[in-house]
Length: 255
Image (cartoon, rainbow, N blue to C red; front, side, top):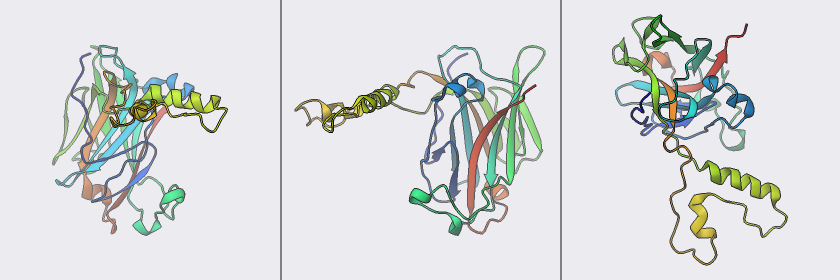
């Protein structure tokens, strides 16, 4: 499996669990990369990141990445028994949102009004395909095509699934070292932060050279991704506040 072009969320919002997107606003909320042992045991269903942003052409682009930390050339990680869903809440009101410490609570129903379902399957030749259901603005309720190919859903709507260079950047070694230092700290003067970008500020008297680039633990690793682009107006369904709350989930069929 070759490495493909980098996914870029230019001018967008990046999120994992949930966030709201008012057309015209952009923000970064959260990310996750297989920290829990339970998720590491089932990498195919482990969502790494969820990105979403709106475009000047009246579209919303949403990306689910999963099964991350893959070496280039590793075997594809698709599973017909895993369902990925992008949830869209289009009945939210801007007045019901809160900020700061109470961000997770609001007066909206926080229930999904549109479920964009994505599944993978393999044909008799061993080739993987992908199906996307309920894409807002699509001419068909169900679209499908080969993994790695752009699937045209009509009127500028599309879907694409494949393997990409992971766009997320994170100093995982510094993060783990910081946790270890904090757990072992026995004095108020101990320096716990161990992120690479802070090295020049925390190393003796050499504090004049400014920050350095943090080591990117994800550099050179691949991630599997599902990309969809859909009609903003169809997703909003005449929401007067122009507000969408979106989140992504994965689930596995159990016997």
